[in-house]
Image (cartoon, rainbow, N blue to C red; front, side, top):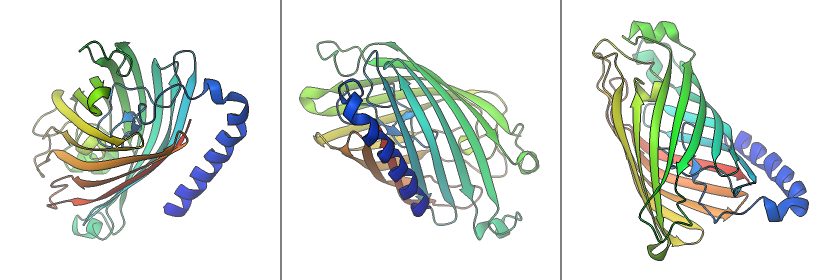
Length: 291
């Protein structure tokens, strides 16, 4: 995983270095970390939740982009995500992520077979509709964005067997982000309409509930300096499947921007119970490269 991550990062940095000499003045209009990092679903934001910020460092009239690779190492599972996102004129964001949920030795205990793996593709779109988180410092109005994420899982048979209703689904969300530069504080709240089980990795809807429900995702961070943001996130979850309770997610994170081409995020993530296995807590590590 880390060898692939290094290779992707190296190729991307080589590309951005080659174009930076000619385009540096019109590719990096935003402050460090104000495009967020890549969430587990590919959108710009925190590790667990999308923010209203548009990914990349492109200002209005410019383009920003990034690639990311993420791994979450849990006691009984391993989660991986990789993808690409584009920020267009600091107004529209388009993203794609491929998620992999490896059950490892736990797969045998679940009756799926050792090393059984769920894969999910996530296509996302986000539109900034109100405010500017950086420049509206004289107003309390946050930056607001609306978004959608289409998700498709590759295991429809297993999902049906555990009580899931669909292997594809769409999440809709509204995010509001406020940056208080005088206090070096970032605040975000996201409301998501979803039917997803474990973010969609265990399908959509279930024997307990098949309707959309509204879930809250909150983030708070403090800029210790211009390169380092530390904070916490909390994400509530639906509980649609009868065979296993689904817990809320939380993390404590540190995001470090080496420069506008490279950032690294590390976190302690608590994902609760997953598919009857309790206390899934572990290290979250993500690398993002772009412009």
